[in-house]
Image 1: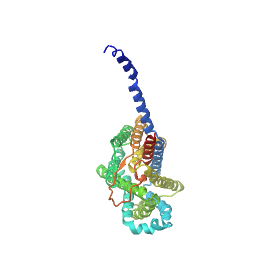
Image 2 (image 1 turned 90 degrees about the vertical axis):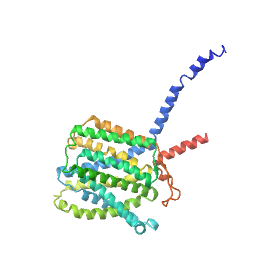
Image 3 (image 1 turned 120 degrees about the horizontal axis):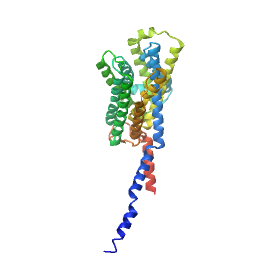
Image 4 (image 1 turned 180 degrees about the horizontal axis):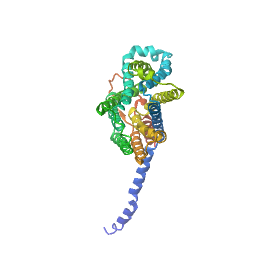
Length: 374
């Protein structure tokens, strides 16, 4: 009994560094999980989409403030025409079940609804600025994210983990910080004629964006990117063209065209075309939810350009907002969601490309395989 007592301190000293080693191992593992190549690539792609949205915002503001041109439907119509000329024509020359006529025979009414949702989402958000404040639009536009997650749960059978809800909360906190910075900078003072109508338009527009994005994720992951863009180009052109003749023909007739206005229209159309073309590529390897979280930084990019172009006031809260949003986005992308599709579902079977954050899931599977081999 007495001989055992000196051994006690020696054993204690031997295992004393264990907690520190365990903490260091945990931090290294966390770093390896949060800063993988696929997450960094996803961040870069998301910010590229944000810059495209920023380009559309800057050109629209230039047209409205400097040239008094406020024709959002005409701008959208040009984008849909580009999608039609490029992607719909690709479908027209394909053969088999991917041919344009074959798709129209089977699913024409579905894509009419998709085109209507996409066109009206763009129109309602822009229209809301005439009635409510910038602050309300920025805050209420985030309503689309929980709607998108709910639709993904029931339609795409996405199953989220606790970290995903935490990540969304962090991103929304970043948006709140950005709105607070706008209030301090005085950017919220441009209230319209009826705030309630404007707020309702934002909520409707955000909900329609969620519907469009969920449909986009479904078509891109289970069918093809060309089919989605071709059908949106076809029916978006038809719907926006009809609405254009109804609501904006007087505004268009009053435009004093010159090369500067034409150049701004062309820049807007190019940014929108790039946004529509690249977003399906990002959604295919992540999800519509993660893309919508990533593009929350678009307003911040618009602000940074506005510092030089429109004389906006700068606040350190904008940097904090950007940081908080990016932290939430990284947290969301760090863990893949699960897909719990019922076995007797009528939709096409789930493949590996149907998993949210595909690149992360593949990395996770490779690590598990390597550990098993060892």
